[in-house]
Image 1 (cartoon, rainbow, N blue to C red):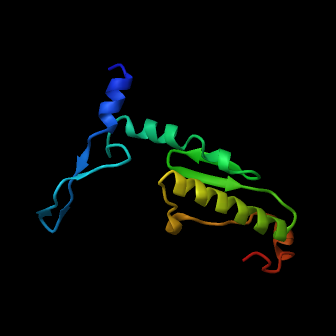
Image 2 (tube, rainbow, N blue to C red):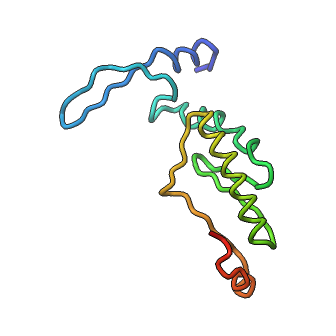
Image 3 (spheres, helix red, strand yellow):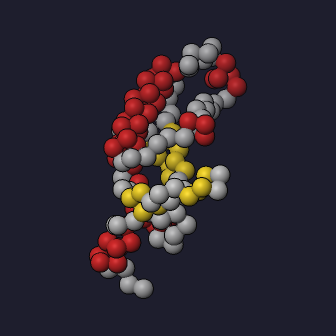
Length: 127
């Protein structure tokens, strides 16, 4: 199938959804954004949608794979690391809100990597 503007438009517009809870089916409600779950085009459209995410980052490097993203930054100063990461997370949060996405806090981690000797010098400076 050739993906034309008309096909893509019809694929993304005038969609509704229902939800079944405890055997009860809800009324249909319009779907304002997103792609059909489990669709063939869904993963490709999602990648196109989030392709500009790295543009909201000024100091860190984004590594993206499917719906998983990590950001990294190298510093010799715990204070600088904390300031940069907090600033970048604020920019990322703004980008997510603008693009109607959310951060899964349960799956979000912060990790400091370094030699044992170097990590000992931090004295719990990062919080």
